[in-house]
Amino acid sequence: MRAFVFTLLLASCGPTETDTDTAGGTDADGDGHTSDVDCDDHDATIHPEAQEVCNELDDDCDGNTDEDATDAATWYRDDDGDGYGSDALLTQACAQPSGHVDVGGDCDDQDEQRSPDAVDVCDGVDNDCDGEVDYEIDVPADYALITDAIAAASAGDRVCVLAGTYVETVTLDKEIILEGEDRDTTVIDAGGSAPVLSIDESGSPAVVSGFTLTGGLGSSAVALRSTSSDALIFDLLLEDNAVEGEGQCVGALMSVDGGSPVMDGIEIRDNAVVCPDVWGLVYVGGGARAELNHVRLTGNTITADREVHGGFTVYSGSELILENLVIAGNAIGASSGGAPAIKAVALASEGGSISVTNATIHGNIVDAGAGVVQAGVVHDTSGGISLANVSISSNAVSGASIVATVNQGSNDYSYCNIHDQAEPAFASMSDPRGAGGNIEGEPGFADVSATDPARWDMTLQAGSGMRDQGLPHLSDADGSRSDIGAYGGPGSDHW
Image (cartoon, rainbow, N blue to C red; front, side):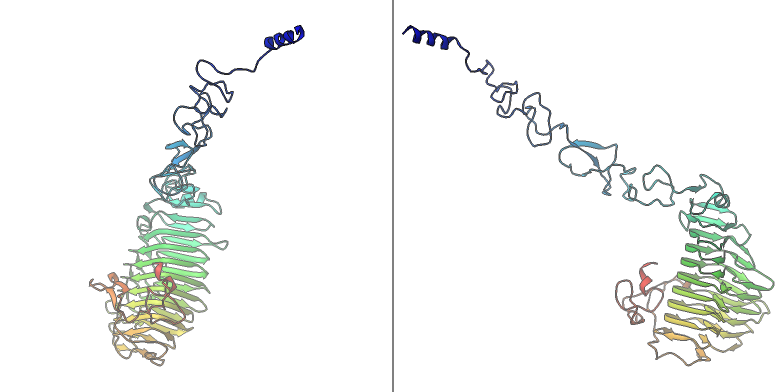
């Protein structure tokens, strides 16, 4: 009996199970915080001293969820919607806030054209947000003159020329990119010298774009001379240049001598040529193969007394490819007492070949005075001229002896429109009208309200008879059959 009582006494004096109850409540999860302050006493990771994380729970028991979470992401406000946000306007949040993205680095969040993904262009701003404005060499920031910038450039460099007028003549003889900010406001003015721009190269091609060439004065190639060049030439305006000479003016405004240059977006307008013998406003020779797309030849005047070859003249063994071409409102006249022999206002081949696809030749004036018009629009001595999807209309031709108002020579016309031309319209070849898909009809231009055809809008009205009447195998940019005229064909949307 004593032993039993002793055993009970020993048991009653031994240790008991820990009691976590306190005056403030229980601590069932053992996190050191009682239930009166612990908002989840069954989760040891949740208590007033816990760090908030992104889990949609109130980890620190302050009544808020995921605020100031230690693992919150950084979000950048993207006001221009280009996928990049401003580093100056950022926030930390677990979920993506409206109008925010997870990538910063946008140097102008009000301009969707400027971001780390953008391509830097010549415009005086940092388009790609790399901290550098424009190209390796900038004019006038680095050099006041374009000539000095070219001299300092190495092969592969880019030279950006900001808007302004640069009084100089420029020679480009390196494999570089020479880019003006805007064709209409970035002007190279030769100030009475010539040529305004010379491209002379025998190595890899240069790239030139975005200039007005003006102020040229001389007898040949006063605006642009390309020699042995494979240059890529885009978006140039040749305007208000003057050609004066005592003999032959070869390529009065532009000359391509050898090489294989490619040009796109070339406008030649309001230039004046006074010369006894003119071999083309644009001349291609020296075995060159020149490709010109989206070209406008408008409002130019030629005064001569001996011989005039067309707006585009190609000499022996050379080749000219023209696509999307407008020749309008140009005039050829005889000088006082002169009697020129005129070989076409538009196209002349002297042993070279010319291929034209999608052109409008309209409202030009040819007046030989006491001279002879051998062809009003197209003349081929030899070499061959091919015209497809070409509209020829309302060209006025006069002279003492008119051989043909439109064409002389054995040339090929396919799916062309010949309208409102004096007869005989063709000589030295069969009249192509009514065959080969060729038609006769009013062109149906969009706007003919200006008195000067050079200022007309020569896109086609919806009801124009030239719509969908071009080469059947050739499509316009919208996928429909090609239209006749300058604004049809695959390049119709690149004007």
